[in-house]
Length: 218
Image (cartoon, rainbow, N blue to C red; front, side, top):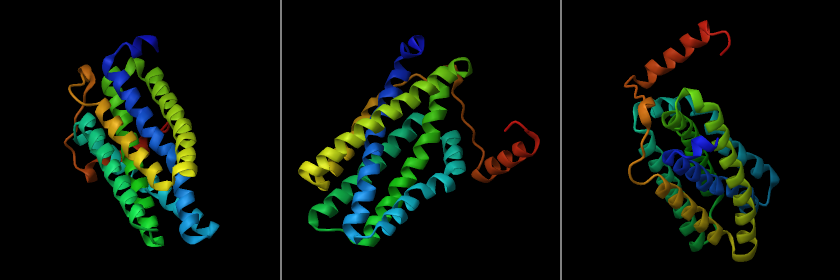
């Protein structure tokens, strides 16, 4: 693990994972809080979290295809900026007045979709940076970064929401994504393990199901 952290690109990806996870930790506070505040119903809280997690089921394979077709570092940055834009827009909406139920649910679905897309891309980029021989400790380090950021984010955003209101908390999560994006700014060496696959999404899906038919371990 120490040897992996000596790699500048991996350190920057690790910090990116922490920054992104700070916002994700805030999701666990804000999604439920917003749904309850807008509707007053715990049933809507369940609906909001279902919409938040639904993209993780639907978008997993397409996200893997995106990771294979594009520059993964730049794709992570685009997703970070997209998350900052979505949360920042909702913060402005909240400044203007209480959002509607529909607006809150659309925000939750968009945020969950961006979360679902970034995780496979980050894992693929981790492989690009360290290669197959060091991938297990590298992934363990990224997982640790996500856990630490999630804990910090939940505590921070919960405290900010209680003290300053939800608009301030949303603004801080927006800044967390911008900071995460800056962690990968400039040139990041991906070593000799960088892979690009120009196959279409449909071809990737066919390849996945073909592999499942013959790969008993998978």
